[in-house]
Length: 117
Length: 110
Image (cartoon, rainbow over all chains, first blue to last red; front, side, top):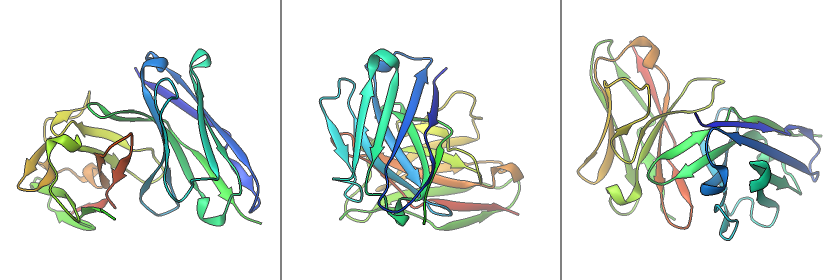
């Protein structure tokens, strides 16, 4: 079955950087689009970024555009999110998800990012 | 800017039936948006219930269903149980890999 395991979260100061990773198993990673979704404490879900199977198409939410960079390594079944110029409002649990419009989203367990001085 | 709308909260009695809806601030939801529904309890990752409008995810009981009702996507729970008390999120696929999330409905079973 689809398994996604995120890592890399933690406490970072405002203006700092962090790199999240997501390792996939249970499916052919290189065939699927992937997405990052976040959830601030006590808040709803927010789509963050999307990358196509071959990395040719990438999109970002306006709230992170210019600060976050998504990438993937199909040889390592891994998805990444490089986060720079972090702000307090970026504090959230970050989920990676396999994203297929006809199959919905398959979620990882999430990794918590806290931006605080 | 288009917003995905959901009821902020809903209450249902044990054994009762409830229908949660998912609309657009401008326009109608159709199957072309591939609506999906997710259940989330505090501290847990979302769990997929319904995808592609009305397909139940593996292991999801048939008392959970999805449909299009009028100009909205709908998620119906029949025979509600106390452990159905959760937040429910609707997600719509837009274009170019952009997914839009509703604000979630907090369902109380009492």
